[in-house]
Length: 408
Image (cartoon, rainbow, N blue to C red):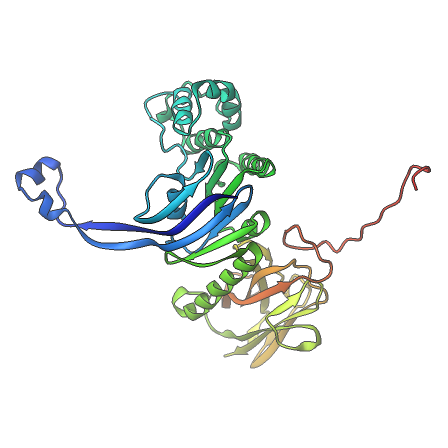
């Protein structure tokens, strides 16, 4: 049974153009408000989108900025209506989209909790029962009776999150709001969402953090320019999306400034060599990997330092080893040459990573050449095969022995 169904959903927005007036009165006096405020063009935020979210599943929606992700969530939440097509939702919804959108700045946090809770479908009695828990979760016990206009932006968002998360929804919609508050508050938010997932609630997550999407989601819908590009298992769809992003980035590398430096040394190529020395873009966890940097010098360069960096697809920097840190002191280089970083057994877990390479002076303050996130590295399951997510394997060995002599 499905909790959410989108059936050939299209959402069209209109842009308005014309002269701008300081006041409504000035527009009316010139009798031109209807002439000057008219739709000049339309644009589709979503076009013919169809997908279903099974009850009790955790479902991800990914795509570039402007692809229609947030519009899809707002349609499911009932914040806006589709231009055409049908949106069906079974159960009570709580949307972590625009936290505190219904708060009134002139009244207290206490009063806003009751108003916002009622807007989200709770009865006054249910809010009374959950009030203390909401306030404790938001860490606003000392400020709950102060007007909301005196709150900082972090306090405002924490209270909005606390109300929304305690509605006990059947369907929870989450749109890039987990960066609210400090690290401890973010941890508790993530734990609360995990609890709802364990309780069998349906969760839909919109996020650019693909590592998190892969770890928590069963299926993913990929939206591109308002159209559904792919639906399927989270790992597969995220991998295909990253491949698409990688190709697009390479196609626009000159325009996006992914390379910089003074140019006395230039890295002419970055090669990925797998077991046996063959060039390849995919290796497995545990494989040998060589990252080879070809360089060309315009002049003698004293004491250069070569740097290789790895970033996870969501931007998390994994590591940045250098020749200097490894004890490889290069007195000088001239002409052309090769610098190899040999990794005997790759510790990266399956996923997509970006490889950067650069060369600087001894102080690392002067950059001769830097290629930022230029080469894509795909890591497939290997040995050890760890399935619960993360970045690296510890290459540990498990063992077991009973301490009770009566154990079989």
